[in-house]
Image 1 (cartoon, rainbow, N blue to C red):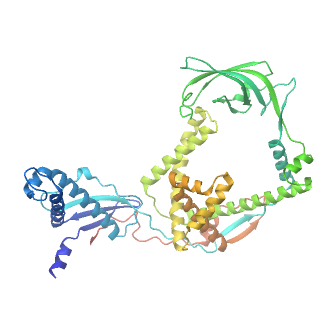
Image 2: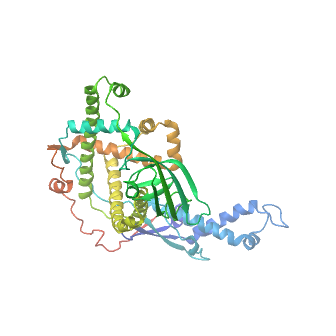
Image 3: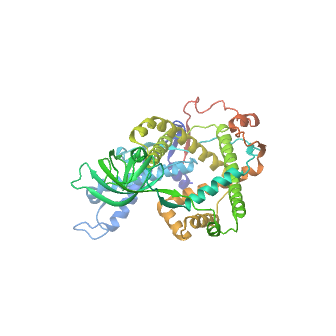
Length: 481
């Protein structure tokens, strides 16, 4: 009986309060006796190992150890008590946290007497009800392969197999290739960089050597062999090549040859190269390929409708800190993508405000979708085995010409394997929802209606609780643990 009373006395007191969307304030009070026991245990361990002049190992008195090691021992006891108490409070109260708690170790002092009281804020997974998952109403467009689509595919294939042919006595046109000598001079460089017989492709945003050039087509279209063209560019400060990053570069181009891409002839050699006997067989091959693409497109459109249905019919708040962090990551990624596509700094600045607004909205939708799909996977008992992951990695590796084991090792190193597993699980959830969906075919000219216009008619929103999180006052509950 005495042991039970001692055990009860050593339990921490834990109070949980609401602290905002998906946040809990955890207040922990550690009894004085727990502090004393932890301190005694630490000194007991130290006394066995400490080497103190004038005393044999393990024989130094406690008062001397306190004088010599007191500050260090106090710090160790504090760190252990805080870590153990916060872990126990989260585990015992079944708080489904999103990240490790942030404990302000430096500003928490271990008291000489009395209890140790501290508090932490933790971000927890949102609590919400899923909408009805069976019989989601979807629209599927009737998509058919046309002769015009096949013609475009064959024309593109002829271009890929084409030959760059000299443009005799002609002027440069869009999408031409020119052979030229170029001289590059960065603003802070002592010497010019001379490039001989380089290939320059006449595009809106192209490259001369390693330097990106905006409106390159305007500079070169109409020029002839022997002409010299000059320009000065401001290389973006975020350009990946340090040699030119953020610098003004003078460029001089001396045109030597002009070539245009002559598509390959649709002859016997061309057909044999792609494993067909005649043009009819080639067209059938493309028809099958395009049909596969259309089926993928149909599935993609219906998948988007499912996501929209789930977003429109699931209501919960998101952890603001994680939204902000995810929004920043998205913004940086979008900025880099636009930069690599060749947009000028002026164009980027024009889009920055729109990018910032869209990144926050995208962050909210992506996070909300993650929590919803996570709960759907739990409800439908959908899991992903290692064999399934290895199968998907093998398919991806074959497409990219890599060895599956090497790709898996790379994904483990860069941390993308966890995200890959989540994506595979999400795809399985979507496949399960599609199996039970109510699908209506519509004409190809029409676009599928957004799910939000139909979902609300077929699914009742969960009734709001009388004490919703946006209205209720902080509620306390005491436990021991």
